[in-house]
Image 1 (cartoon, rainbow, N blue to C red):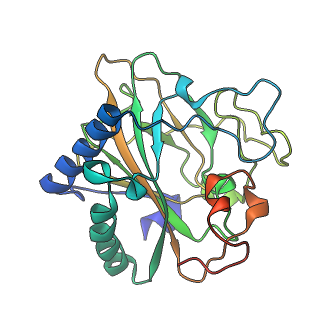
Image 2 (cartoon, rainbow, N blue to C red):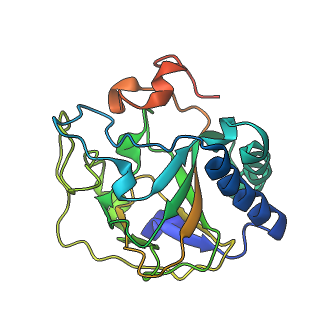
Length: 242
């Protein structure tokens, strides 16, 4: 499969109209009710003057745990069945995220997702779905094809692009991004070891996207991989993920 070779692929029209409407309602409800956005960037040792995620985008973590119309649990269940049929393996939802990137938000630095996960192995993938047509010019994702084969790097400070305090490893240099042009409802699937970035939104319209992270059954929680991730307060270290 293409995701194994270059680290990412696009599933055209993966989300149907009903799913897109449900996600749009979730964004609206999070803002209307005033659910606090996620401002924490750091999974290891925060620096003396930590930067806020608000510089990069407005993000809500795990809306599948929220209440009412803001909840995404139903859509997570629906796509879980689709993904398991496609990949032929049982999956566990690790987390999902609502992300809004506006004109004033900065680009995301190059990073991998797995170093932010308190999980013992990078066996799984990220599903990234825009709610509108998305490309390099309105905050789309740029991916360095093949970089998932280079192993695990450090968790990155997403504002300045350097490894976070308390972590080891280096950030590759001279990465060349490929920006797939996505239609609303397309799904970009990529390895949690894929080095990727996000461009600045150069338009006056918000770029809305929903991301969900999935691991294969048999994975375990490993707090030392991301000790400050908020989920570490609700699960047991070394326990099988369910």
